[in-house]
Length: 501
Image 1 (tube, rainbow, N blue to C red):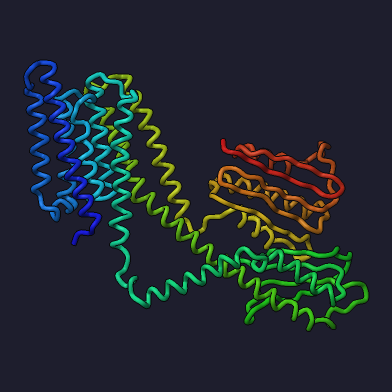
Image 2: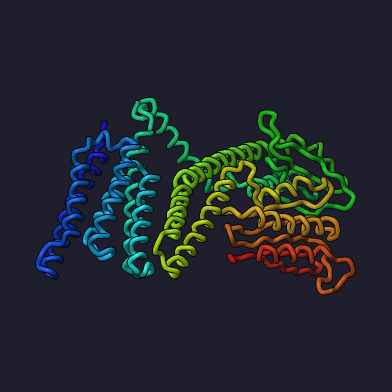
């Protein structure tokens, strides 16, 4: 059973066929009469071949034309007939150029992206071969405009077919049921509430942690404290307060919901104070902290699932639609390059295009591999792994990285090594109490900063055996990044920045 859009596309196809036929025949006859005073055999032959194809398309039942093999045959026949008529009536100046859009439109609106793209490619390749044999310039604005027109017809109407016909047919019939509508309404309500909550401080672990330390300080005599959240990559410190007293030991208080530990509150008492006397007050303060942390982790789970599903969807479209089109373009260019009568200049241009298409195919395959990888590692994940591996009695590691877009595997590996070296130096040599890993990563550009509150060092001195900074700069150079270092008695900051190459 045909949809209303399929019927509309069929009417558009019929109008396009007859309009292109009438214009082509009319302009061809008019040109012959003006120049020779009689209609040439080439014009008659071209007009008859296009008219026969048009009639064939009209008499073939729609149900048959939509079969894959029949549709592919009719599209290929249409391209062959159109190119035959074009070659007989002036090449790239032929009045039948518009008719070449007919089989491309038909393939795109009945069979989808793959056949529509292949048909457009076949038409463009055949036209390029004919123009090259006739000694015409394939880089001329007129020819490039025609190529763009045929490509737009194929891509635009193939996408329209997917959006208006394929996707609606894939929706289960029970969507319209009352039960399904009720579930969708409930999901919409919950998502709206989630969107409102996401903009408040209630879902910020840093804000919640600082509030908890402040509330505890109102009634509990502690010298310093830290709040950490337990994430999949380890426990991360989100808030600190006060300065740790040398030689003092801390007490850990679990932040948990339903016996599930979500984080830890670590307190170091003031001299002579006993924290255990205040355990009830501390646990009371930690109840809303535990709920807030649980909300944060639930939101992260939802976000990660959405991101994973979107990555898979994009990978599928690249693999199933864009990839085959690029491969077909490459094959068409190979055929054109090897064609008889192609001059050296044209062959060189086609070879350059073929090389570019090959690089695009490799890029698409590499991107699909990255998107489908469930173990894709990010800079943020590396930072959390460093925090999880830190010694309990070492400095706190606070992480604040905004990461949008994917870096390449090579770039992530080098940046992670630089970050690891900077954190190791801060932990082992700086006598720091806190190390901050912060920055902004936006695909192929960004800044990463590792700073501490340690004793610092003389960064201008050429100390023997100081290879860490040299190694960081070498790694940065390999990915086109730059490392800068600032150090004084208040701490050290290592900054890595990179821009598109």
